Length: 304
Image (cartoon, rainbow, N blue to C red; front, top):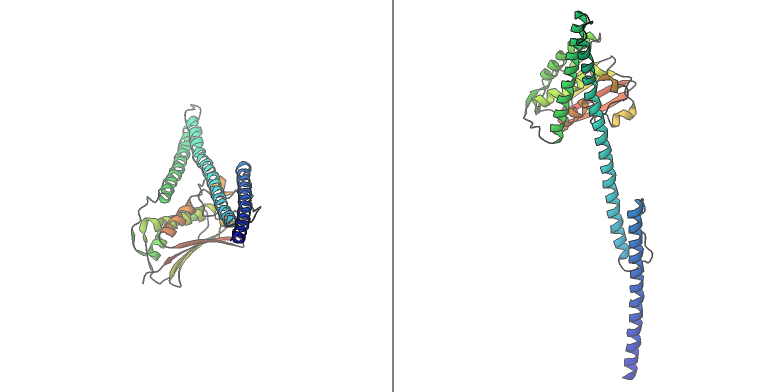
């Protein structure tokens, strides 16, 4: 009996020693994790937690904590990018609004000059009217995009004849192309095609794409409507020297403009609005650049 008790005492003593040793390792591991977390918080580094003593399930805990840290860092990067984009947007909006206002102020001051001939004053007044129209367009685009992003734009899908709408929109801008001395090549499929879309939104998509081509294009205008594998395919193409391959990744982002187009009185919202409307109505929109030809393709599913 004494032998059994002695063996049991030895076993318990050994178990207690093992437990104390493991407890010591647990404490060291926890202290190690704590020190690393404090370092990460203080230094804001890309450092991840490591294990000093692989004991128990602390390895699993470290993996979970590293996952949380990575997710937090990704959210921080997204937030930082969003804040940077927001600041750039504010600067862009300020520039777009300030430019026509400064011009209007200058011409109105010239209007007050008694030495300026009457015909010159009439010319200045026409310039003021054009600048105010530009400002109105900018504010309308800002308001429309804000409503789109906020989900406040109520779409009313209906059956639309794509060919008729496309032809009407092109005819609206035909004279503008003639003024530039550049007649667009227009191809509209004879097949009658219908899609399900909001009439105003669909017209705005086409209007913005044609305006973009008119404003930034440098010739070789080609507008087409065809049927492609169950979709109505609309193509707006033109020659350009402003757009590069790197621009295609951002061409549909809000307020994005190329360096050259910044001087062309544009907010960079036209294509962003077209993309928002297109995707909200179940369509797709893509931009391509090949040998100086910039092409935007819009697809909508055809109704049977």
